[in-house]
View 1 (cartoon, rainbow, N blue to C red):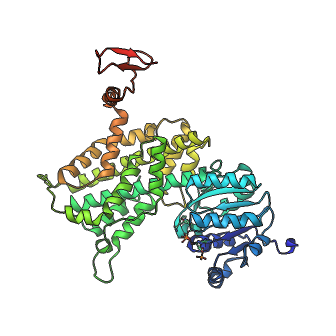
View 2 (view 1 turned 30 degrees about the horizontal axis):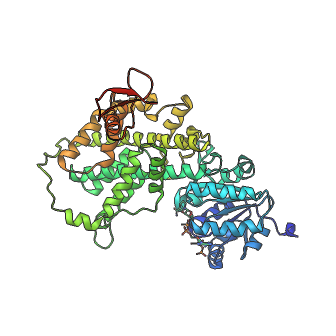
View 3 (view 1 turned 180 degrees about the vertical axis):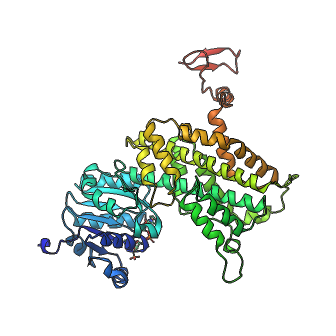
Length: 481
Ligand code: NBP
């Protein structure tokens, strides 16, 4: 019988960087961990290097792996997202029993998770799509974990996940997010926000270099200083470290010998595609995804190098003032990017009936993950004070922060434009803010045009119902049926 050997509380299959570090994290927290990898070499390498971290059970086949687990069995899959995940789920599902729990900790597309959860539910198995953020280091020392799936499985799984997650003020950076694909959905938006945050930091850096002629070391010092204020965050912290790094081969700043073409694995693109489907403007995230795409269009960029710049303005002379302007612009644009990300989460929640709690997400993103930041405490408070907040920008704290930043924000976007320095995320965030607060938008004209060429109808400001102008007849107005 399996009972004599079924002693592991959790199994991890897929022992590349992420899986092996999470397995070690579980073991360090006193759990017995069954180990499995498609090729046994990775399992043995992990045991050889870190077997002393805790109690591991080495297995070679899925049958042995499943037999090593206490019931209800809990298996965490950490393989390459996509087809590999389906292959592993299929093998596991055949070997497991009703009531067992399969957790996918990979970066799955949330619609795949919805599909997988439904299929496994039919077979009596619990499937939990869990977003995990924090990279290699987080996996080992405490990631932020976003598990979706059935609430019942969280009862058995929650204590394990919460114990290995990052902790902030005694609160684990892990909570049950909601049903089926919700965990992977919020992880996707988290990554989208990460794209926006990185792009905004990149634009700030670019302005320091191109508008103020500062060198990477000087800019690193500014980011270090910023990291002790409102902008305190993992990304600002590592930006200072990166900018301080000197290339051993050339003696130049490392950032100057790296090709300026940013790659992407796809979660930013997923976020934007989903936002388009949901009809939510995530302009900060979209600009960040497009900025990476543009940077990678190396042939086009080389061909366009000599395009006219127009007459460029003089560079700012008050370096301290412009530095403060950039700080304010970064903060305000960041508020916009997060506000948009939380709007997308609310829209996804409504679309799929997930009933998500935005404040919980801000809480579990405070530690472990790439977007961890002091700022998230403020978001948590904002949603605690008003769970039905129409936009994060309207929370009194952020409203007042933007009011303080607004003149600087405008100066930065205007100056960058006059100097020919691209600031797509700063500029579009400011435009979003201006559009959101506008009394009237040109959308009225859009509606009239749509009605002109397609009889799409419009609403009036002074009467209920839908109307159509007979554009190709006598241009009188009729009420649409
Ligand atoms: P990878 O994404 O590089 O995947 C490698 C693992 O997948 C190996 O264990 C490999 O087994 C296994 N695998 C593959 Br490839 N095809 C398989 C198949 N058909 N059947 C069974 N196993 C298969 O590993 P990672 O970078 O550790 O990431 C793991 C997951 O975590 C991914 O979904 C990733 O998106 C996600 N994630 C990564 C990070 C990060 O910072 N890297 C952060 C958050 C989430 P083998 O050894 O036999 O080839």
